[in-house]
Length: 230
Image (cartoon, one colour):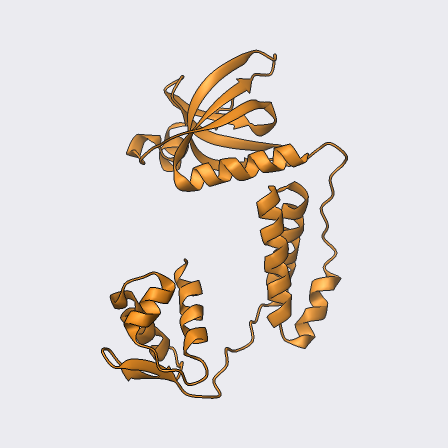
């Protein structure tokens, strides 16, 4: 859980005058009591009316509510446009998450700003066949492997249609306008490569890997400024 989400959850648990110990909050949020002590101290420092102390418990004064979420109009446009792009060109989970995030943001915006969401004139469309459900699912699987640092074993077709088997350390995904590419450390070539997702014929999960200084995205940019692509 992200720290921002955890702080929000602490406030929600303490609403309504309920006394909760740091241990109880830690168990609910699956963190250590020490983490709760730090988080509560930060919330109090930011003005949230929490009372109590370590070893006794915490309670929040009645009547406190989270302030409405505020975004400048420019940020609203950016959020809506980004959600629409992911809905059109993202993975299945990405698209659903972007849509849900947009619904949640609109729900907590002050009324004068809610209308601005519907007024955004930036749209993203796909033609038939440009992003199939299988391609979207593949994108989600690769994004998950990048995040969890698991190797991918793929069958890859080059521009001429020749197939090779590759074992990759997936590092990042990039969208080039209709084409997604994966930056990875290729264990076959012992070098960085960029792979077009629409040329991946088969994909299987592989073993986990640990970051190595010469096999990271930072090393890719430092040693391959031309962004070589297979």
